[in-house]
Length: 281
Ligand code: PAF
Image 1 (cartoon, rainbow, N blue to C red):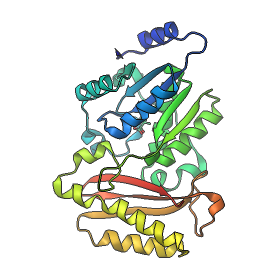
Image 2: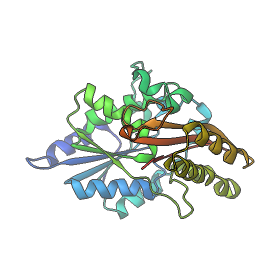
Image 3: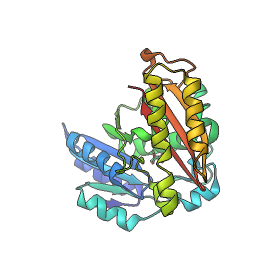
């Protein structure tokens, strides 16, 4: 496995590697890797001649400095895991390598980033779009892989790819869950034992809301149900629960199956912010 910290040698390596017919898969991550990330690597490996995994905690996507500071970092362990699953290339740049001075380029996604994550984390998606565009320019992948847990992020990146004409295909890979249903996330590492148990409430309330809506109940009823379930767990707070059109992320007031609704939730367990989602069908 090749490890690069600098852009120029990585680009030179990829240029040398790529001959006619070869494809490159990119798995962008912020490290603290778990099995969810490894399933993205596996998928990329099964579809490409070479898989690049980037590990970079991107400061411009954090609207909360404490969150950035506390984000788990474990490069040595990550590299071992990537080696084990047969990843070909790791790119782990420094801030100086990725940003020359202050980042001033901003993205505005209109309605897409004014709801849910965009509403509660202003500037977050602009930072994601900026860093992902940099990775696309540096690696020039044929395919890039993201987890379904960050569904709104996926929709945003899809728009970036379409508008900026990056010639690549995006793949969303289903969320992996722990045995008790908790969506795998690097942030789970920050939960203490009690918080870890409480965190399952997000998955449980998504399942309950999904069941409700499948039985024909209204979205307002499903919202009340979720609010009540979360309220019962001390130390857990709900930021939002929304049912959205999975394509354009418009928040729905009524279920219309043509919009392939997705149920999205975000909240805190202690001071750890978690998100999850589930398609209605
Ligand atoms: O989903 C993530 O881990 C990050 O938002 C990403 C896509 C690696 C950009 O920093």
